[in-house]
Image (cartoon, rainbow, N blue to C red; front, top):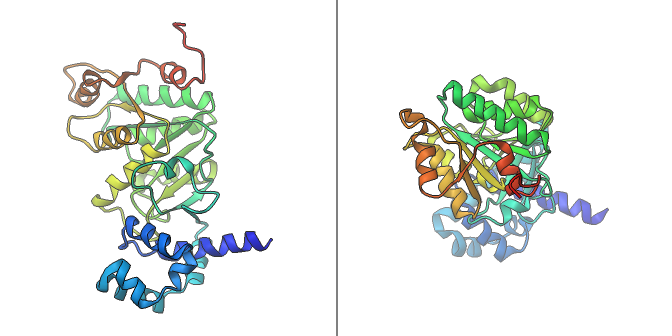
Length: 300
């Protein structure tokens, strides 16, 4: 019981630290390495903080410590129905622990991902075609039907469509936001946000009340790919945020698959280019399920 209480206390201090969004993840890990625990970071002396963070960072840290107490951060999260876990906690998703530049912690509403359950990220264009909608629904339902979690960014278009389809099929879907968990972005996906929180999860590396700023999305994208065992792209233009996620997935060692499309349709240029560059060709959800050894390869 004492061990459990200590774990909760360390989580509280970690959430307090992670509420300082201006402190880079690398710096938080450096502080943790020096202090040994989140509470140890909170109790650090000014000299050690200055050596690890610089004078300006130290001043901001001390001001934060003076004005905001760990208990108040923890209570605010609880009142919003938001949980938190960090890199030293047993509940921290191990798939994220293994990626380059892992997040220090995760804020979430709903359930944390189960590392033993396979997961596929389905991503693509915000302004998709009817073909893109059909394929996103087909793949997501196929994954959900075999117990595979569907990961995406809860954006308009392919992201949200695939997540709705996974939930409709009775599966689990996890939405990773580029804002705080208490901020539904885009606002048009309020229904999906509620469904994810009830039947899956809404996750973020950003503290409460963080707005959806453009610079938040590339770091968000690495969490989408990091939680997945494979990434499937359904419609993407040549220059799009989707291809940023692909680059991060490849850096993380994840397999990337693309749904081919008509050569005359600019929405398919990104997918067709990925295939030319060596991405797997996704003709059906069974192709990916076989690669993940969830079903037997039909050609064997």
